[in-house]
Image (tube, rainbow, N blue to C red; front, side, top):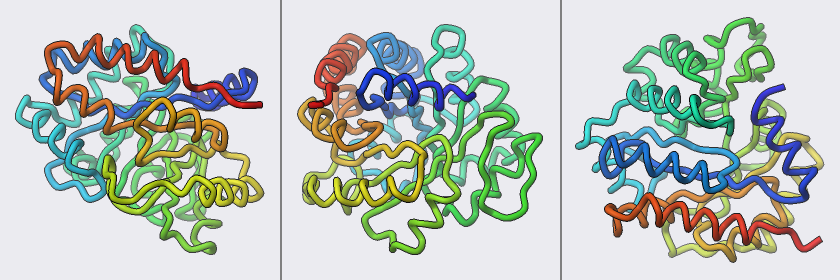
Length: 279
């Protein structure tokens, strides 16, 4: 059983959603970044999404774009990110998902990326710009798997390919994505980019959509985009299996780089406190 599966089973037993944190590796610099990430894990994250900075993001808003630029200037690369995983795994057992774009993975060599990520202790990858239909670009390199088509799930080595469902995903394609999914499904809560405030979350609509998807898959459904406050976590945690926070962490690091280690840890603590279901 994979770490992700164990984590979501634990969350179900505790009647709460998994608290999933995205943090850009290398921001504001290599040393402080690792300390911040380590502190966030200690403070109570259930799953870590370790962001690999990329120069030309498509889904990330200004806050994460700025974080990526700072990290790139600090020398962060995909290989350094995998080394972060290796160091974190010496201290923490929580699932770690590498969050990247396909360009850095392709540049490294996809087979090398998969092998080194597994060896370092990563539990999967979320590749924003690699469509679900092309997931075999990555999953075919996970050892001991059969690949009858491009819809792969992973049980042998527990290196999950995390898929996304967006508000613009039509029903037929959504069903196909859900059929192929394992680990968890990233549900994009609203249109737009990460961290933006122009499009508010329609919680009632989102709740109906998640209820529909629960009839189509047993894979955990996790909500991200626009989740930035303890109140958001409490609301999302009542309708989803996991709640994903990203830009709020990067905003703290951007505004308070010298105290970010403690500030991020305190923020995680506030989210853990808020993450309680009504029933």
